[in-house]
Length: 543
Image (cartoon, rainbow, N blue to C red; front, side, top):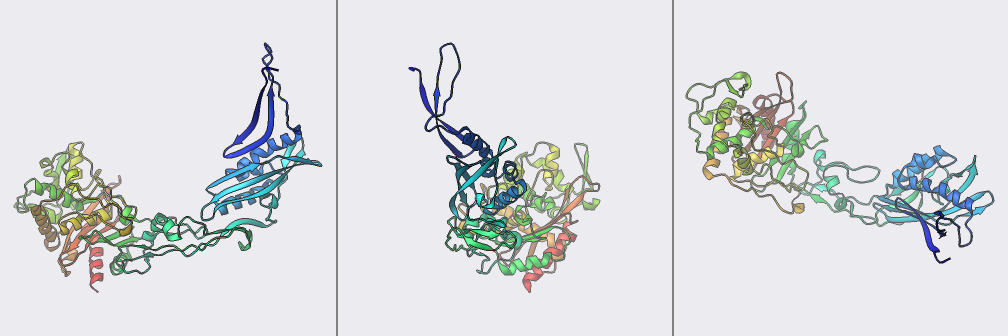
């Protein structure tokens, strides 16, 4: 017939190729509008085709890891689900492709060969051939499930698993010793050997020896987990170490300072010249709040606000009224404990005593963008390349007078991490911003601040931060050696009345390259609660 068309009928399903090898002859009859199908090429058995149609969803579900769905096409759903789930969980393939071949009848069964191809992390590509047996029951074809059907080397009570983890590299401190700060290093999954958090996850390829074959596929006993037969070979991987800037002496002093603290807490120390992170301690472990936490910095942010006011022409000796209250857009704002300072108070005194009302009253000297641009000189809001996950702070432009009133005292939409605030203190010490770094050889491009503070601004900030210790809210450090400079902070959060507060203290040492930040979540007052922790840290360093 002139209008005969020959084609190959191919079925496909989610990543696998079903090649039936069936030729279709389409007969178009003028005016009739119908198509007639005839299987050619040896005459395909319709029962074999029906059985393969039933096998298709079983293999498809297995291929996509849906063990329960795959098991529903078998004669032993419970056993099938259990084994398939075990195999897919243990091997955890990045990709699975199952291809079925031609089937044939043998007695009352249809047997269909198939190939399983997996891409398994740590192994590479692994494939094997097997065969499915199907029988017709109650009018439909059913997959006869058995362990050897999943893999011909399996026997009842066995499964497929991975074996061999190789020699994992270590995470080191600045002295070359293994780093013990768990919230920084992160953790490793004991079964897969993969890093799951912290530096262990970030540098998993380096620490584990790369993506090459370093594990073996084995047949394992399901009860004991012991490997009984190796199915693939593997090279023994040797991971490379990751060296950090953590100074073990400073890290121990920080960790010891937080011991006994009942609140969630963090303590960070940096070298102001280089930005090297010398310590990052968290209490308790787990979340690395020292580097990644997002908090209102409260009055520690007054270092930035003061820098903005100084660059607008104010001087530390300028008069600065400090009343109990100030009203902004119908809202009454106050000092902690509703204190006030006497007539004749200077800007430097307001900073030392952390007078909110002075800073709120001075907001009109600043534009809606001044805090954001001044914060840039401290690196806040930039994209830092530290070698670890960090939150790098946020100081948005002000959108209203009320927004500016709370922003100047480190509340509202202003956010920072303990690392950011340690860097703020370090910027004052150094005179310019140096981006913090934890893993130097993994830093591609350090962030540079788009502006710098005026030298006079830096000098004034140093004078004012020393005043916090000698005659202000940082009296917990007053009798300590090394010339500590500081700023306290009590940051409100939540909707409770009275509001709950985070306790902060930041600072640096005059006689050494050390800047630091202490945070106590829901910890009370900066001076009375964070101050003693900071003092303990500095005393520990002196031992």
